[in-house]
Image (cartoon, rainbow, N blue to C red; front, top):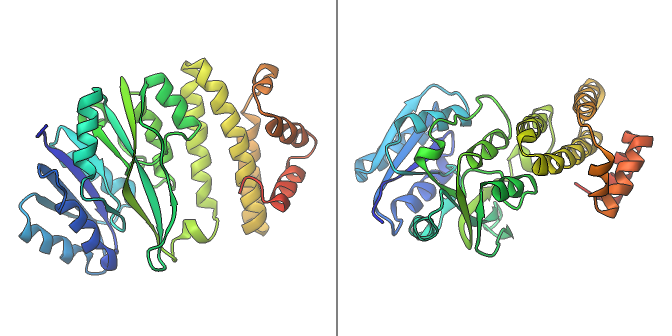
Length: 322
């Protein structure tokens, strides 16, 4: 159980949080790590902090590069990884001390290609836990795992997972996309034979007060809708999952329209409305699909056929789906 794990950490202007992040990786009970810190053109002292850690720990590699965004930094790290397994950590987050020891043990025991652990969100105020994801230990084959991605029983994020490198090393992240994990996770899951989820909450996701995703909505968030649409199209090869992906996509259109009503005005709202409606037209919901909806989904779907904007206004007033 002593195979090398490559841990890729994209770093950009996270000076106040970086020591905590790197320290949590360095101090893992599982010691055979290759820690790849990718300084993505930081303008604060993040790059210097990376270099200081490299001087203290021979397992650390530091790459300094021109700013290209989170996906580009991850891709740069993937091109340098040499471990049999690979993991990702965002540089303002931190991990529990036994995370990789527990996860690699479960991968070995279950002969899985990916292990996913629970995570907890921490707020910037007193680092209070505001939400934790947990589940029972579950082992899934590829098809079950793909369905779980669509139903979000598997989180569409990369950082609470440990992957066999051979399964994902050729899947690069789409550069320049918001919600970049939406474009990547299902492709990774489609390469596996088996995946295991464990209930252990081992990853701490830090929600900063200044994080855009926590405070507002912008047109860039529509990248997530594009990711869901590409996933839906990809899953046509799995008919039983495709109908679920269509339902997910339709109600994701509702969510984005609701958010546009709440946060956008003028030309921005008109642009978002046009984009959402164009995606909605491409979703062909059959009567057979409709019969598989629950009663609330059936009601909202029927109402949306009368007035899509009207049902989104109603859902906002109800606080439903946001």
